[in-house]
Image 1 (tube, one colour):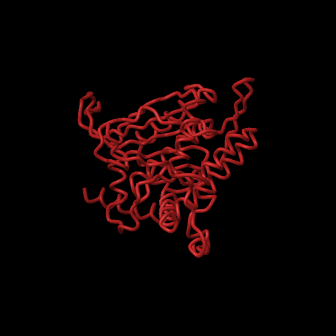
Image 2: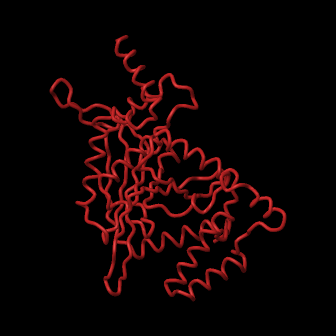
Image 3: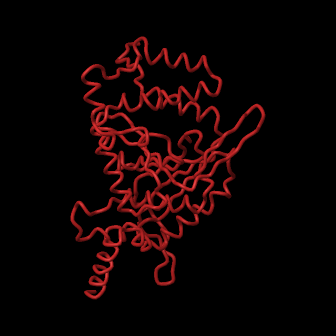
Length: 323
């Protein structure tokens, strides 16, 4: 057997491997695939963007992120962290008021960076879009190894606090020695990098772990026809959402009092939950809230900035009068 290529883990791959291994070894997952008909929502989204300047338009992904946030608010236990001792079966669940969403993002070089979108529970769609844009701009000014090294260091400190000193020492040695050591900036390059204001590059607050994770695999390949059936929960979080790509599928619609099969737009969404923290029934209010929104998509206008709410309402009336 001839080897085509051998690559050693960089710091990003090490972190992903460590966290996901911890997830699969210790978390009993509940997985649920939710496939709502988003035909009317997509039409409402297009109406909102109609006639707006390119820089003022919102993305469908941002709308969905806001909708997921509303679902989380309806089932607060999803927005929790867990502490659990397997040997003693002693545990506790801490539920947060603030919804800080961890969002995995693919960088231009193909590597993945997870950033934290803070306080989504209070934000309009436009504010979420602006904050996501700001994070992307910060990424362009950031050195991934430098940014992730801080996260890895903090994780190692937590490992020591849990009494796993040998594991921590091995991680430190691995990052400093051999072929897999982390390549950090030195000398003038390091000074130049850290002279960039934190407001313009990723800092601890931008990459610290959120209260829940929302991953958007639909944005990676919009032509995909599949559905994610499971995604790992990142401890100590207790839930994760995985958004797929909008797909055309047969759906049942009531037309003139009769049910008919028509072609509609379906959005696969996978929800995974930690069975140690909740039962499926505790997530049902989230699903019901999502159903409510998808059945009455005009509600998304209420989540726009006030100026845009007025503008879209005026346009909607003009279109209605014209028809």
